[in-house]
Amino acid sequence: MSHEHSHDVGPDIIKRLKRAEGHLRHVIQMIEAGRPCLDTAQQLLAVERGILAAKRQMIHAHMDHCLGMADDGAGPHALDDIRALAKLL
Image (cartoon, rainbow, N blue to C red; front, side, top):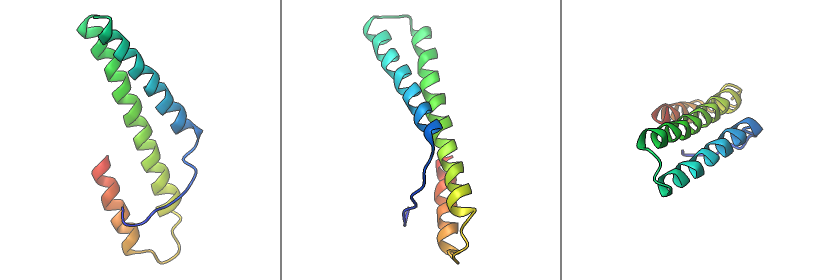
């Protein structure tokens, strides 16, 4: 993005990412142990969903907190942010 916004994205996002990190470690252990592909793929899906949920929550928080409250005449900058965020969804 062209400029930075700093705000508290909240402990819930960190919790989601740590949970996904734990799932990812488990997937690696499963692969190393030669666990069945279906079981491993199901755990990998949990990793994907966790990261996706955290990303969406962070983007929504940014839109609500930084763009929704922008009353500083940011105009074109806010529009640039919305376009950049839309590519990430």
